[in-house]
Length: 142
Image 1: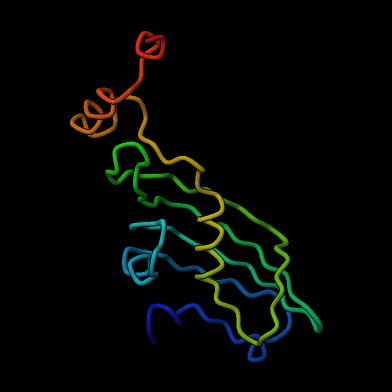
Image 2: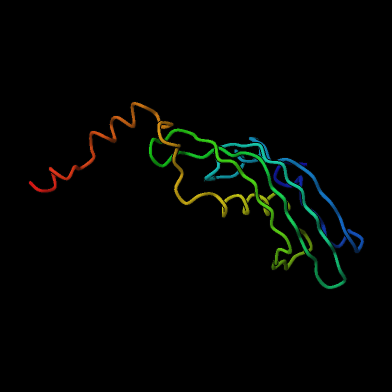
């Protein structure tokens, strides 16, 4: 089974009731996604799926760390991930549910809008270069 389909759940093959799934998203998973904001990472995922006759309920617990590009210095930086989403409303029109993709989407929408290192954490060379291009109040007056 390929990495992209490893966490594909066929809903019509599950019995009604609660089902638990535990897995990790790692560098292999993140690198297989084209144009991903996430460069790499190691994230533990726990899924509770409660299947009923006509619908289902999904709770996701996602915890770990992912690596993204710093918007300021363009170097990789780590972002901690600790997300719990319960009673997710999903519009599934097929009989399959990709749990890994759900977890990935949850990570993406919960990343900070601006990715930047803590003060002093950026690449020093890039930080110096950025500082040399800042417009100061004195330059604005001229």
